[in-house]
Length: 549
Image (tube, rainbow, N blue to C red; front, side, top):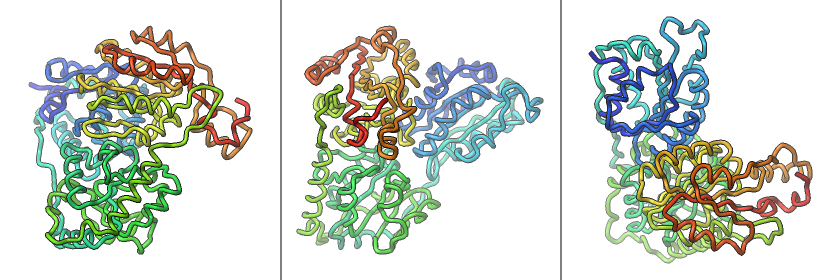
C-alpha cells in the first residue's frame, strides 16, 4: 500500500515534475524516502531554503511548468517565504511542501510549529494542511489546478510528518484539463477594427506570453499587424530588442519615455496584469482615465480594469487571443504614414535609452561599460540572470536580447535571486552559456549556493560588482537625505579567495583598461568569477557624490 509521501511523489512525476529543490529536514523524511524511489526526479539539495526557492522559480520561468520546493517546518518554512512572495509577485506556478509537526501536536504550540494558513494566507493562492492520509489526492488535485490556472501563483501544502509515512487510500493525481476561455467573437471583431483604425497603437506584452510558444506568437502577430511592442517589467526577452517594432521596456521609465508612450491612441495589453512597477506607480496607462482606449487581455478577469479604465476586457490566455484574432482583413490601413512615423518615434526613443550616458569617474569602473562588453560578446543561446540592485538596471536597457536568449531577473526585486537562478538555469540547459550579474550584497546573501555548482560541475560565468554598499538604497538616501548616508555601507571578505574555494577561475578588473579580460572569461569552458571594482560615483546622484560612507 502506498504512503501519503508515495502518492505525493508519484503525482509530481505524473504532472511532469522532473526536478525538486530542497533543504532536507526531519519533518518530511517520509517524502524524501518516497522521492528515493522516483528515479525520474532530480533532487537538488541546497544549503538555504531561500536559494532552493529561487531555483524553483527560475526553473518555472524557463520551462513554463510548476516549480517545486520541499522544506522542513518552522525555520525552513520561514526561509522559504521569500519564494512564496516572489511567486505571487511574478505570477509563477509554485508548490511549496512543508513537513509539519506530528498530527497530535498541531495547534498545541509545538516545537517549530506554525499555522501556515495564517503565515502565507495573504500571499499564497491557497494554503492546505493534510490531516487525513486519504485526503492527499484531493488536495494535490486542487493544489496543481490552483497553481497553474488564471493568474498562476504559489500554493503551500503542509503535511504532518506522521501523515507522510502513513498508508493512504488516496489516488495518484494525473494531469487534468486546464480551463481555457475563448474571446467573445464580437470582442475579436471590435479589436480588429480598433487596431486597424489606430494611428499610434502600442502593445504591452507581459508574463503570460512567457509560456512555450508565446514569444513566437507575439512576434508573428506584431509584425503582421505592424504593432510596436513594449514589454512589462524585466521581460525584455519576450520580443527581440533590435527589432524595428520594439518600443522598450516599462518599469522605472524615464520621463521622456513615458511622455512619448502617453501619445498612444490605443493600448493593447496582452498577458500582463499591469503591476505597480510596470505602470510606473499606476501612471501609465493612467489610473481611471477614460480618454485612453485600452484593450486588456489576461486569463484572470479579477485583475482587469481595477487600475486603468478598460474599453475591452478579454479574459483568456494570451496565445489563445492572438490565434483567435487571426489574420488582418485585406485593405486595412496597417502601414499608414501616421503609424510609420509613430513606429519610428518609438524606435528612436529606444535607441537613446539603450545607449545611456556613462559618467566619467575616478573611483572605479562604471558598470555600464562592463554590461556593454558582455552584450557585444553574448552567445546566441545565452541565459542571463540578474540579481536585484542598482548595478543591474542598465542591463535591462543595454543588452539587446533576442530569441533564443533568456533573461531571468527578480520581478519582485528580491536580492539573492541571481546566483540561485543561474544554477537552476545551468542545470536545466547545460548546453547554454549562463551569465550571472550580481552585486556584492546579493552575493553575500546566497553565494553559498555555489556549492551546488561545484557538485554539478556547472560552468557558470559570474560577474560580481563590488562597491561595498547597498547601491539602490544609497542612491535613494542621497536624493532624500543628501550628505547623511548611514546604514548602507559594509565590508567585504576576499572574493578572490571565495571564488577559488568554490572552484572558479578568478579575474579581477580594477580599471577600464582591463575590460578586455571579459572576453576570455566569457569564452572559457569552465566556471569563471569576474570581480569588478565598480564605481560608486557612477550610481549616485550628483548631490551625494561628496557624502561620507
